[in-house]
Amino acid sequence: MKRLPTLFVSHGSPMFAIEPGVSGPNLRALGERLTPDVRAIVVVSPHWQTIGIKVGATPQPETIHDFGGFPPVLYTLQYNPPGEPALAQRVVQMLQAAGLDAKADPSRGLDHGAWVPLRYLRPQAELPVIQVSMPHNLNAQTAYELGRALQPLRDEGILVVGSGSLTHNLYELGQDVRDPEYAQAFADWARNAVETGNAQALIDYRGLAPYAERAHPTDEHYLPLVVAMGAAGSQTNGTLIEGGMTYRTLSMDSFLFDA
Image 1 (spheres, rainbow, N blue to C red):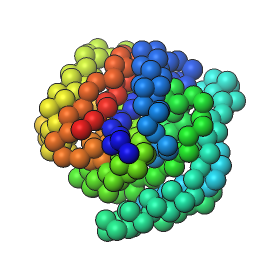
Image 2 (spheres, rainbow, N blue to C red):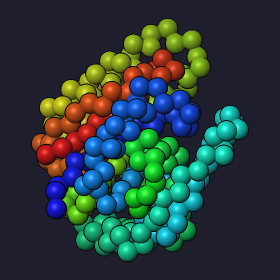
Image 3 (cartoon, rainbow, N blue to C red):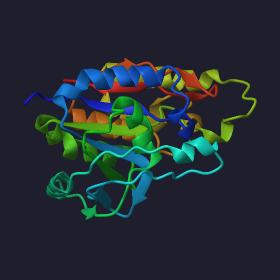
Image 4 (cartoon, rainbow, N blue to C red):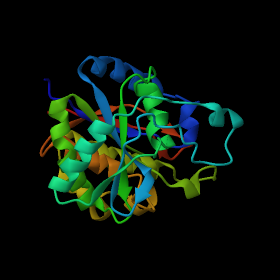
């Protein structure tokens, strides 16, 4: 079976579901290219944070609309892929074998960090989707280790997706930001680290990246990038999937990691 790449997708805000911008068509084209080799998708999203790691094991995950104050149409959208409880148990066993505290969750659905980008990546929703939670105490180093634990899935026809946002300062959305170019500076730095396969730089981003604290006041939307690189394996270069910049400071760039 062909070894699959891993993927980091920027899902930005829930509005991405109805505002495809540059990223939506690019993710759709990528999904069409990858699908013949993919039998299932495992996705890590910052919108499911738990004590320890939970793995969604329901046979039919529901669409969770875990946001408020957005246009009514967003609450009507559904993304209903099948689950695969046997695969979920396999993921639990892999994580436990790596020394991680992991348990199956038989009822959890897919939050918008999972289903919004997957609507573009695989709109037919015919592939099984398993969501893996982020432990509430995850940091960049342990995010990389979580990805490493998922790495064997690449040889089993399973696409590992980390879904976050390359920049994510929601305090500045809708504000009159005088210097929005800081977000592009951070995105450019991350792109260089990804394209040169510099996993350690991504792990140490707080001390190395320009405007790291401003681009990510909290870590959770950045960490899926490190998970995706960890799942790809050491010294794996990534390539940019152009997403552009929305709301002036929200980078929608994504990356494909392919050995």
